[in-house]
Length: 274
Image (cartoon, rainbow, N blue to C red):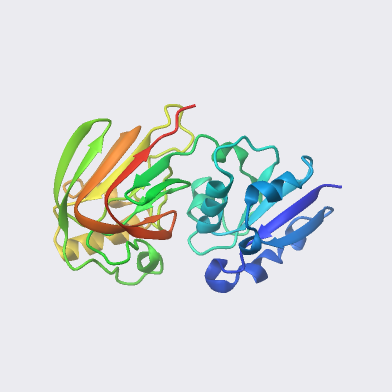
């Protein structure tokens, strides 16, 4: 009988993570399960070392939970089958791999190899979905209000930035939003609908929302919720490459896979080559 070690996040989904994870016995039948609160695990490497190789590990949480897990285990080869079951709010990763709400858990080992990294003034992290921010915002939040159909909160003002892709600089004025992604989704929106996280050349993308007034920016943000912003060609630019650096005129708070990070003057995202 297959055995799953369920690592669930009780804080996922607005504090409903435990309740949602407890639906798993109805989804996965004819198997044995053991549940562990992932917030109580100090070292993922030590925890996994105690698990038999034939047992499967299932992460039940949101994008932030999965991102925390991949940064906790580092780039070491995985000896277990890793499964994922979304219990978060936006669940960008789940939608990016073509899954819908209510689908059963999926083995995700192939998505955890050769992940890109992001570097800021405060350090570096491995990236599951992407890096997002509202330039000039105090929180860096992108998709919370957009994804729930409310009027998006814009920062007090746009700013000028420089985006360097594979060594080539590009200057932009009146910039509101600059997400860098390895998938289609980031922060509850779809800024790069043509991006493929499994592409052979490992390229990543960055989208710049620029040269727009406040109300036009609001319309574009609403279009970003389902990937329809490419029609705003004068205000939305998508660049692709293996190394992307965004330099701000002042420190800007960012989010990495939905988790808030300290303000930084630069953000470098690089694809990990096989």
